[in-house]
Amino acid sequence: MPADSQSCELLRAIAKRSSAEQIHRIAPEVRDWDSLFNLAQNHRVLPMLFSRLADMSTAVPQTMQQRLQAAYDRNIFHNLANAAELIAVLKAFEQEMIPAMPFKGVVLGASIYQDLTTRTAGDLDLLVRYKDLTRATTILLKRGYLLETPVSAEGTPVVPNYYEYHFERPTDGMVLELRWRLELTQTSFRHDLGMDWVWPHRRITKLAGAEVPDISREITLLMLCMHGSKHVWSRLAWICDVAQLLKVSPDLDWKAVLREAKRTGLWRSLALGVLLAHRVADAEVPQPFLKSFESETAVSNLAQYIQQNLFDAPGTMPEGRVPYHITLLGFRDRARGILSLDFLQPNERDLAAISLPKSLHLLYYLIRPFRIFWDRSAR
Image (cartoon, rainbow, N blue to C red; front, side):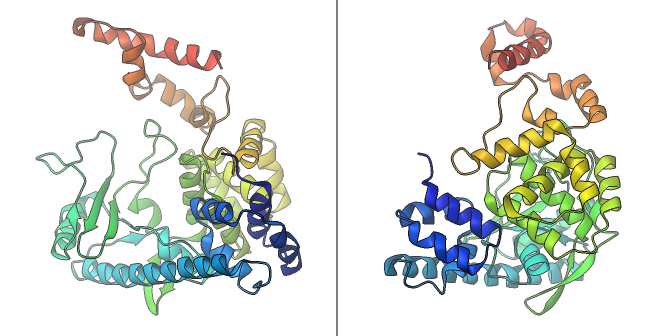
């Protein structure tokens, strides 16, 4: 069901950090507060919504005020619990001389929002080196976590191209994800981006009174754009994160960001994320770089599509002969991916397209390009 227009208008105004007067003008127009609550929850911006409506008791129904306050209080509790656990885990890793880099979550909130209450609480995410994975896992198991990721006898994930251990602690529901490689837009096209990428230029951030390692602003911007692009920017919160980072980073080294984006194949993901932050959340971007991003017609069109469908059809991809994830790749990475066996690896759709005996399964490598071309042409 399409989101109602008043709810969408209010969330757009909050994303743009509109003045209190504008919020006061828009809020009384909301007719379906349940729809607004659900929309804000789906886009992970309930804390922002509560903060902007906190002094508008006359415009917000009392039951909705109570509901927003309860959600806000729960989020504070979860973020404080996450912060305490993260600090404890980092200290345990440090005692065993295991470098670990937290990313997203409460560290991002502390780093760019300077406020643990602003972002919705999520899981704990930690990046480690693969060589330290076994020792890090042992520490987490001693802390009561259970490893939920299926692993082989050698200790590697059973699922191919999977670079994450998922831990859950039954006693309190804490979820921690241990990663040794960061994914790009699609598993078939990836660079080896891990601790060697983020650790050398780390900075320090204050989290609940403790000092924790934090990723440099330049790399954080690339990571946010990588993550948002991977999920087709289906949540408003991810766009707001990029806008907030740009707001608090007036000294951002844009030339270094662009150099690194081109080196890692993230240039178009960066362009898409920055354009969305500029268009949806009014993020300020230096004109030379903004013009450079807008000159990429395919990326600019993607940004326009995502902006238009953000609330009614989040996460959908535009139709066309070139798939979304391929569009985000530069020419060199696109050519490398298309020529690789990863791109040609048949999947369940290829197997369903035509039934072949097992002895002829190699033919699926030839069928796959035609099947993809047919799918895209038929749209």
